[in-house]
Length: 230
Ligand SMILES: Nc1ncnc2c1ncn2[C@@H]1O[C@H](COP(=O)(O)OP(=O)(O)OP(=O)(O)O)[C@@H](O)[C@H]1O
Ligand SMILES: [Mg+2]
Image (tube, protein in one colour):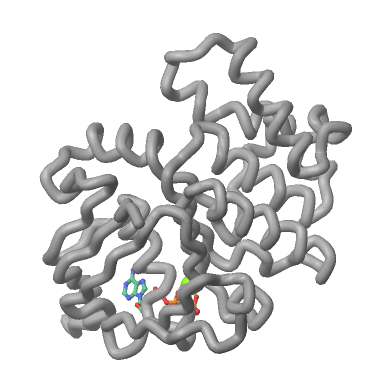
């Protein structure tokens, strides 16, 4: 299976009141295309830190991150943003939708940043994604005019607009009812089947059941648990 994201000897520490907290300690892992990963671990274990580093949003002390075989540790911040925008889609726990933009404008935004496609093309693609998410008739709604679950689906559509190789999500079903949770997990599972690499932080047993591989962050390292639930 094609390797799309590799972490080598990743170490991350935080310094607080002169005290060093080692969150990730020479961690190694390889993520492949076509797989759905669920990352869990106790509160404070370093899950959010880990996915933010994987998404090139956070600096680290030591080690390497290879995105599609490209060593991100050698890139400057502009090159990193460009690599992130092309290859990685994010779904944050708190969505971060832009309140002054409608659903479709929020979805279009990451593709706009690239400036390579026409507005018409981007709009068409965004509309198709909203349709897949069951939100075609909500395209003109502002985030405050959408339910929590609808906002979350807009955030997922936005993460997909640039057709990323890797999708990172931090507790993406956190605020959803059981039916919407299944919808989102099925969408993510389908994307993995289409060859994307899906990495989801979650404690939720349902997410673990959907995952091909469940991994735990513990004591600064990653432990792969065979997925006994699926
Ligand atoms: N900016 C910071 N400065 C100092 N310590 C931090 C900082 N950010 C996070 N930490 C500490 O690093 C550890 C890992 O935090 P992180 O947010 O990655 O945990 P988590 O596994 O996502 O937890 P949760 O399940 O509660 O979301 C925690 O102990 C936290 O207190
Ligand atoms: Mg967290």
